[in-house]
Amino acid sequence: MRLTASSKGTYYFDDVSLFNDKPPIVHIRYSRLIDGIHEKPITLDIDTGTTLKFHPFIAPDDSYLIFDSKRENGNADIYISFRQKDGSWGTAINLGDKINTELSDVYGSVTSDGKYFFFTRTLSNGKKNTMWVDAGFIEALRPH
Image 1: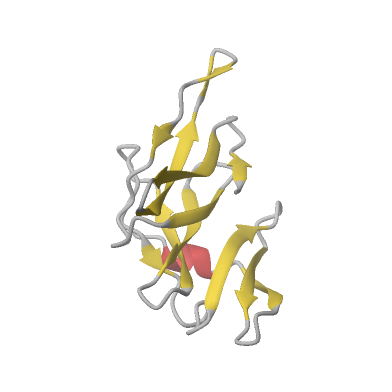
Image 2 (image 1 turned 120 degrees about the horizontal axis):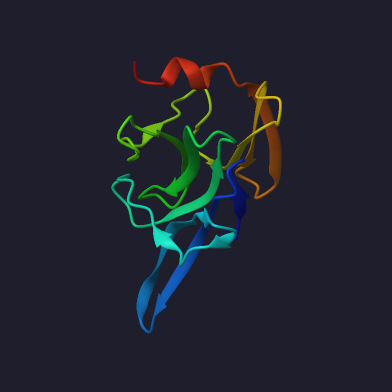
């Protein structure tokens, strides 16, 4: 559904697994560029309490990953995970009520200059609005 790439050429994308009569499972996967060839995709394990993780956006420097995940009520919230010093990904952080609402908030991304955060909100009437805010909140969420 969405492919994003870091400046190192690593691809991040969502992948849907369908199983006969069971609900779909959506994973975020990545594929690093090694010696000019992309490796076989690897499933990324970031805990959000759900198996449905969608629409990844990787920071150009690979320092954070933004994605959305469905809640129990069927709507979605946007999360961020920061890369740890050991290269692993930290626990997902819900972007909170400055971004997420009781409605579905999805497709988070940051402009190439790092100044603005854009996302899509689905209104109660089904229409979608593109929203944007100053991206400065990202650094405030980064664990120190």
